[in-house]
Image 1 (cartoon, rainbow, N blue to C red):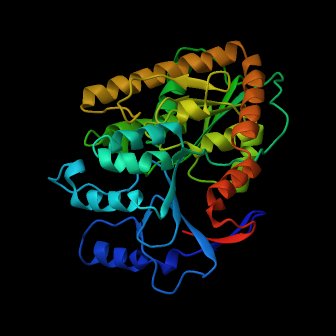
Image 2: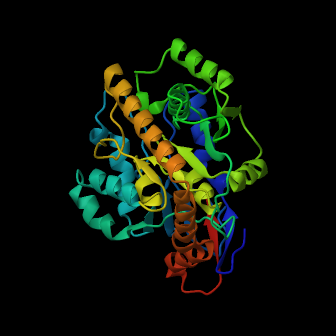
Length: 376
């Protein structure tokens, strides 16, 4: 891949752990290690910077890592406390080395989670804190004019491959309850759901997963609702075309490291209703969309520690989702206003050219105008 400032070379298969992890997981039944350790002599001689995603590097070459939650990424070991894990201690030494130039958090929430981790390791924090940077992902505008409202149906669109984790069930429950309450007619609203109903496991629910009766109820409501159409999946060009016709996006997610679909919706002029987990308040601020508020822990996530707590959170998500939908129906002019703000936000905060220029500044330790980057 080539950009105006630099060239990228894909080095994934030049990583020793690309092969070791296959052995560790399949034969030894051990956790994967998120480490880039280049095979000797395989990196391009003119590669000045290695840029990783969710990995740390074991090398004497300069490197940068972009990360979603914490870095290093070390999977939990049963019976071992997180900060007592020897693997975490070993990999923390890698980010403290001078070869690690920058650690790029994809959101401020991610940066704050990282700082919380480093509180337990003061010496590492002192060596690493100046390397921490927030840089939100790029997103090109997919339209230039805000959504103008005309008489007719308001089209809501939900996109989430992991249907239940992304809040698809809560969308169905909200629409079903509003239908029973005669809040709208068939001519007023259309809801499109894109998501796999077979992907039922919700990581946010931990051991308190929903039961078969709940899934059967949701699927029955989808089939019988006059307002809902459902697709398990659609090709991306069709999804983008659908967003151009949608008025409001839906992502009442239980758990998300970022919420990339929100960027595509906003870039299509489609403002979004989201929950407030992780980065969602950052990318869906007041005036650009609608937020569902729930208490969060210090990692900006919902705490589900019982079936009762799960039901309470669900009830609150559904109720606030209903309130936002009713407000939109009563004041559809909000859609045009929020659409304009969404487009403005994407143009100002996610411009791909500005993103590329910012990366070029991080890569500038090479002191060259044109240089090659080993990309993992």
